[in-house]
Length: 340
Image (cartoon, rainbow, N blue to C red):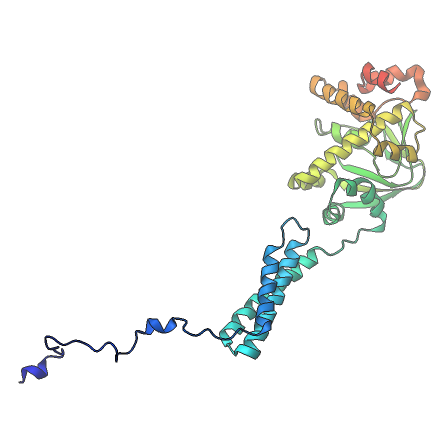
């Protein structure tokens, strides 16, 4: 057998010098840009401008995510047009079609979230007066009023709560229409007007003690309509919404403060109560501080703030018995001097 045929290797003679001039260039060198191609079509540049503008929109802008997704969608659509009509590049068209679908779906979702929330006509005044000034979003208010509450009515003379009979653990209500009057042992205390809690003192007191009864009688003075929550379900909901929980704490505390005003003037009408809502005075701040001090200092469940929260206080028309009522409801002499 020939030795030359057995060897697959080619033997290069000594002293052989390859001809570099006539040899072909390495394929890697073919990527070098010796001659720049012509500029792409205007559609290509407009698409990139859309991307650039979308990325520089400041996040502090309220609609920045909607604008970003909208510009990205337009940019992807322009890229598809450019790749199809001017470039004839199937891969570019396919990838931008995928990006177009993703951004378009996200854009539609964001616009849907920004849709106007339609609040029921019966609840619109409640939202505008109590919740909108505290920056509660309409969708959150709709969740609050649409799941575990209902609107109930009372005719003139019907009782919302009876003294020492009705349990305070079942519900929390806000008056929407009409007027209610609150009395204690047959003595008139104050009125309740629309957009005010009916049983805010009882709600606060039963956070400390359960299984108690109303210490006052609440009767409809007109045909009334009120929004009623299941207390247990409302509590669970507020625990999952910390922002709304703080809002309720504020509103209930403010409502109790307004009821303190009405102790000194039981003829306080709805118009005057709105003025108090807008312009809380030093008296209300002092009374809230006093209530907090009472809450922190008292240990007897039948004294102090809890008695006041169950039944509020007496009217100025009963000044001869006023000190008895203040003592019964746990309102200190300091509060009496502040309001009188």
